[in-house]
Length: 202
Image (tube, helix red, strand yellow):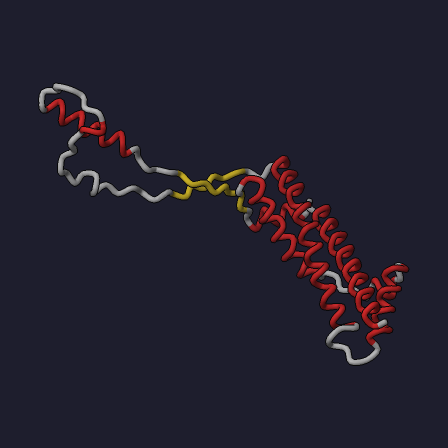
């Protein structure tokens, strides 16, 4: 069952408590007049100091995972997938650069950078298929993260493992958007870095 996290504030109105105490004391004294708050003389009484305000309590509300709610979570996950895919693609490009013509390479750096640049620009499968892609384990971790973040963004919802499994069966669009953003960012960043490297080598 999907759970919504809320805070319930149980702090009473202290002004109301003070007013009631003073009114009771005035009635005992004959009820001559109703003083304003500025000239009231409060008795030396420890009733208020002994009052313990309860801490806000967590209240979990069970929300059924309806088709409508599933659709909202999936739609909320799509922009998150694009953002995360872009960030991860750029990060992986840095690793590829280091292993191809960067700091971990001692010879043939220029030729390697030219080969990657040409392969990406020409759409050469020999180059594109050799670029890193997320594996099945990566997909599971990434999708769980995206669905958790999307559910929280929709209505501060926390998904159970069973609900995430159920959503995964209907969230192919989210993964497709992640892969497209990842691939585009990876290739664009490699092109940028290769051109910058080759320009420095001129």
